[in-house]
Length: 156
Image: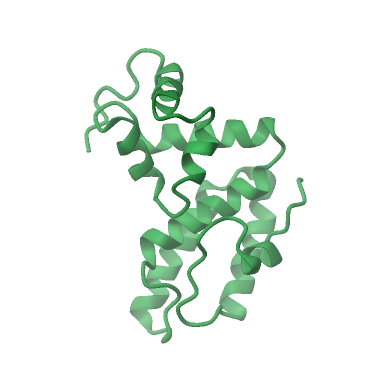
């Protein structure tokens, strides 16, 4: 994927033009229609050569901040990370390879979390390691029951 033109011109306006062209009134609505698609693939769908995953991330975060739904956004990002890193769901056996895959997904999630939610995400991450979900668990969206338990909708 080329991002050579992603930052040219008014990328925010371009992002929203593309979202509206696809029949959505917000980037959040567009993303919610594809709840397990990684952000880079959402970007490709909006413009393979001129939209970057980080732009989609920034747009979704801005919308979440305006609507006071940042915690839901944080869970949404985790769902997308897990779908990319663990497409078959939570591994049944936690060997070195599967622990590495989980660590990458959770580490990326933590790195992408806004500062306001870092402490809560670290607590959720520790809870996942201490009491792993059942084998095959694969959240299909940010309102997954387990995710809501780990990171309830309490804005910080």
